[in-house]
Length: 183
Image (cartoon, rainbow, N blue to C red):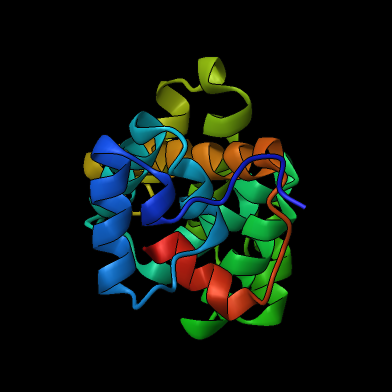
């Protein structure tokens, strides 16, 4: 049971009302519990939506971004996010073995292992990132933009995972959760 109210457009005012109304209309009332709970704070709701939209413009391929999300969410312990990102990873063709490896912060592909491991370090020890860590990514063909996008993806995952844990949002059917993370 959520610890915070799951809002509808009718239960909000001001900016939160405008944003939730727009989402409600665009998605036919199918707005996920995390986004509805964020309706209690217009700042959090709009910040989440803006960062989420921005990170969809990353040049990293979706199978990689989902693995990064799985690595971070495993560390955070957000079952809701793990369910959603597992479903999303399957949808983009990530194998069950690679999903399990991503949750451990690695991959059987050395280039993917490098970026997923880097993301995990960004999450757990950003002060430990040094020139060698960035050079290692570049040796696998990653560019500066990719390195910076990893920071944004980690930040987005920390926001969503932490929010769900604090708000008491529990896993629901993975397909609906994946849709709510994308909205």
